Length: 385
Ligand SMILES: Cc1ncc(COP(=O)(O)O)c(C=O)c1O
Image (cartoon, rainbow, N blue to C red; front, side, top):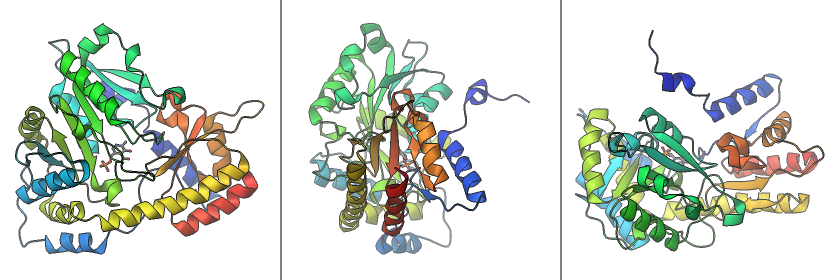
């Protein structure tokens, strides 16, 4: 039977491996508290859930790829309130089925192998979907490392002319998963300028813009000229709605037009009842403020613990994660070895190396268990670390 060689070459999605290890520990009777994947376990706001129920009709036809006009308007209104950017809901916004599918398939919309636009750059450690989407589009993936000494921003000066000229897409993700770094607007302005100059797309994955602690982070939607810029955002983390699958792409009208041509073939328009719930979600900030406060309390609990234990916090400014240095030891422990050791005590964290080579030496804590479970985990770690 023919199987795509790209698929055959894929290693197991790292978190599948992590979950398998957790099941093995559980089968020995150890209760596992899961700080591995960034899947919020908070209840979705009742108003949003009710809107989903109210959106159900006797007959639900195929949803249109361009989405409901009311949803596009709700997204544009949100972007205006949050970032001060005026978007035309008809030409600059398209809803997606969460961000993941849109991120995965985006290279298929812009990569042009015949014209030599064959490279998709992305930062690592990071979300594995950028690389996988590039490979399935037949493109050349280019991992750009994020180093702590550069504030976990990619070193744009290290990229040579030939690479710029071959780039179809440059993925960035701020606030960053997993390093928790925030990018200033000047970074987006510079990269958007390079995108216009060299003819590639700045694709900004902004899944975590709403989970901040000091002040609201900037967006690539705020650059002065949105030519060649596509911003991806989602309700998954902002509104604890991972299961609904609802997000959007916004930016350059030419890119949104290309997506409107591409997406009907793929069949990835969110169901209309999900779109109705999404209108309510984008229109409300109260539940988002409450979510931020909950993450803030959990974050404080862990920052205090790690402070007492002398574990260095490499990143904690935004997102639902903490990015920590694996404590130095003799002989040095790998991030995977460290995570395995914690897992023996029922604490599941993500080894930095699972998120890319530059993640070695770090581990990630996703602050998704309940506050009660976080407190229990802190008590366990108090003894183990
Ligand atoms: C960096 C980043 N981008 C995008 C996503 C995708 O989120 P969703 O498909 O739920 O919108 C995630 C999910 O974990 C993520 O961490």
